[in-house]
Each structure stands twice: as structure tokens, then as C-alpha cells.
View 1: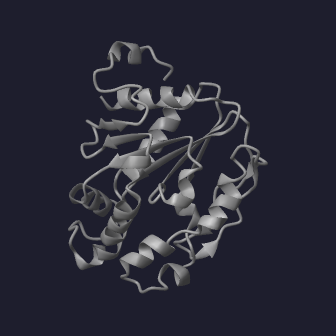
View 2: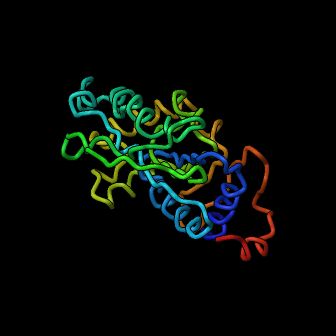
Length: 234
């Protein structure tokens, strides 16, 4: 069951050292279910004595002029130019890293308004857990930041129709309007092979029946006794 899988991962995260902020990435293509999965994890972790910070890479877009500098239909531009990684590091990831100030901002830019965001500065407890969702999170310049990372593996034939249900373009993965996004994410998958770097890989094609495809630590697998999960922390 989905709740049991989420509970397993939550318990893995809670078992990590807590003297510094624990930084967790939830990666996957558009429509993979990243935001929903991160919210489920946050709900499961609530009440365990660890403050939760929820944030997304979508609050760190580049301005439209940068995002479309290679053309509005360019897959290369989507992959290379969508996000302001130096600003993401400076405002959020570096402060929440070991030795950082723990004074952070969760947002910097609203891509819908094509305008900067003056987000309030917050201060994290040393025991906080950052749950950070978004695409392209296993790029080389980001990998070192994650204490635990999840890659939601979903076929484009599933993820694109999901996005369309939210009003995000055509449900046809090969529609011209989807080329920028599908081919841009194929570039990421080819170059970065996120499944090799993620702590766990989850097949999330069927939302009510996700299952593990990989656990880098071999800590648990599908044969795990679910009786223990029912009495878990979440």
C-alpha cells in the first residue's frame, strides 16, 4: 500500500543523524507526483519532534528572458536554463548545509508573474528536515546537497497525461507543444542518470501501487514485514 511505502521512507529519514538539517530531495519528471509525494512525507513526519521545511525548485526559476534564451521550444534551453541554481544554493541549500547559518529563504522568483519574490528569511532548527521537490535534482551541481534522495520513475506516457489533467498542455507525449519539456527531460535522464545517484528509486506509474525499484543502502525491500510498518512512527 502507498501509505506503507511512504512510512518506510519516513522512518529511513528519521533514522539519519539529526545534529544538522537533513536535506531530502524528491526528483522525477514533470507529472511524476513529486509534490504530492513530498507532501505525504511531510504529513507522515509531522509530530515526530522534527521541524519540517517544505520547498520546491519551482520557486527558483530564472526570468523568462533566460529560460527562453535558446528559443521557446528548445529542449536544451529547458534543461540548461530553467532554474537559478546559484541563487538556490545561496538562499536555501548552503544555509541548510553543515556549517551553514541555517537562515534561509524558500523562494526567490515567481515564474508565472516573471518577477522576483521577496520571501521572508527564516531560521531552521538544527534538527529540521528539508523536503525539497522538483525536476533535475540529481544534476552534478546539486547531488552533494542531499542526505537522502528519491527518484520517482514514471513513464512519459503516464506523466504527460497527468500534467494535462492539471491544465498543463496536451496529454499526447509526442505533441509539438510537449517537445521542449519531454526532450529536455530526456537530456537530463541521459546525462545525469538520476536512478544511479538516488538513495531510493520508486516506480510511481500507478499512484495507489507504487513500489521500490532500488534502495542504494539495501536497507529494505518489498519482502519487508509490513506488520512492523503498521506500528511505525507515522
